Length: 146
Image 1 (cartoon, helix red, strand yellow):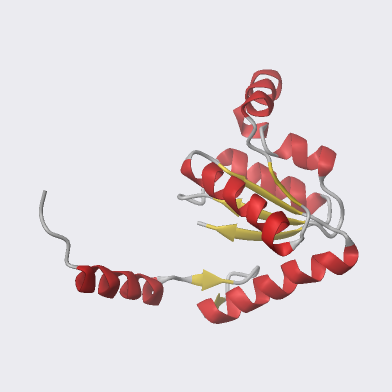
Image 2 (cartoon, helix red, strand yellow; image 1 turned 135 degrees about the vertical axis):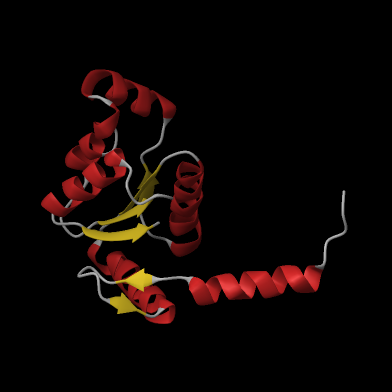
């Protein structure tokens, strides 16, 4: 095992933040700071309207979604959930097909004004895209991370 150069690691990490590309809902490029501030403002406003944050993701993104959901309610006092329970996923995958594993619970549990945070490494996962469509049809705000 080679040695780790901590200074190089943090320099690489810093460069990654400079390379992040962010767009708004219309595809217009915006700065990372603006996007984070807008997201915080939108999510913070939920507490006064009793809406919730719903998170979805596959694989490692599902783990991120679960962790974020817990942090939102535990540390932020915001109702939140992640739709990645194994029984839920296997039931919906079996009964409706894997492309519908997120759209079906969103159709059932999402309310107008809720926020969906959709996490996808590729940004092209059919089940995530279907979840986004379902959230939009319910009148939810959508934040994507890919």
